[in-house]
Length: 400
Length: 205
Image 1 (cartoon, each protein chain N blue to C red):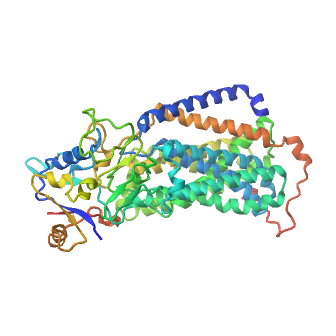
Image 2: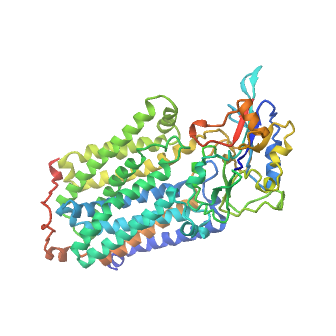
Image 3: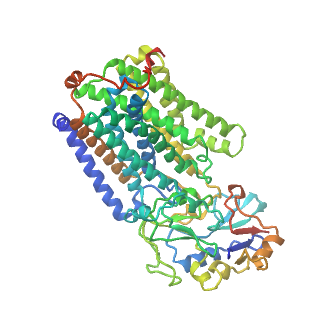
């Protein structure tokens, strides 16, 4: 556990935060979800936001690693190990957030004994489980150096990664009740924002590993990944534009939801995402000379990750603002007069979220210490890529 | 097949909230929760009015679970805790509910409430029909169409207690039942028809 030894202070802080998180979770189990800011009016909150966020963050790693194998992008293979470790940790955190959000976790086995095949939540649990298994297999085969097995797993990994984001999107996108969610573009948007936030997090982690000296990523590779990130940001922005235009154009119900999104309570999150999460990082990363500056790449990546977090917030909460039938029984609260829901995360929720993220960070450090081959040794291993099959498709992203 | 439903005469509804209270009493509904609520249409508050004095109008809209023929909540429920029974009612098996709140996100009518904590009752004891099962912390609940009463062949408590007899209960699959005739003859409508949920609660005036 070399990374723990070298970063004693960080490890200690993370461990304390994780313990506080566990304590807060026990408190929540005792008091029920009433200790959160959620209510009948806004029945999903920060946990589901974080669930969406971490499913997305998990994408970058596995997609980079598996495309390296499938499309024979030799350069990306170098970072496959940290990428898949990151992906594994993030998907575990996402799963933890779903479980924490359940009101009756003691009955969760009911999903196994009597699943309703029509429920997107059941699909999600199946796909996330598959995804986790694939991640673990990927790590195992990479560690063993079984190149053929890695190539095999990656062929399943890529479609599974696309599916895991789509299914998460369908939890929301298939609900006709919520104007802001019910759209076919939800799944593509989730895949796109998973790609950009996941890649951005991978870049941040690679630079951090560079600094720790545990794992070296060549500067050109960082620049090349940053180019891919710019493309993903553009695709994400394009999908959001398509959705916003379709909402606005008829001037009907969609336009009302859009008005809430752009000028209502969730507007700061929407505009931060559009400007800070898409526009600025794209304008920075679109120039090759900016991509060569690690500082700029990290800055842009941080903005992208923050932007996607904001997107999760506006995507989830905008649809809880109004009801189809104002004042319905399901928005009642203790005083009996409530006509609409309100939400702000409580300290318990924040403590649990910080705790879960700390557990994730510790998990990443542990796996990285165990699985990452120190930079010096890596050089010795000859980069014999699977050149035997198919003509080489070398993606040169620096040309862009 | 039986398809139980209710038709509500909005012309007769005087907004007395008796149905809401009768329901709460019968079903042991905890504090801060109503399975049935009487809304005032077009208002930002309960018992408000629309317009400027002296030109005011007020229309009441009693709202509870619509017992849809095509229930969005049922499809979303991961464990099958929400089910459509052979009497055409949408019911919840509380033992199967894991508290994920998919159904609450899926219901276009926001008919469902959640037990965010151990249910509190102002009187400090359980009340209502002894046959109504108690709900624990962490499960969703809503109007059951008074399952326990209708199983015994009685009408739901909101129907029984309505002082103006604005509510008509019966089998929508029986063309000769009073509720079926009212739906046809009085041109009854459903709420949010465009959502395609095909409610079994009708409104007419």
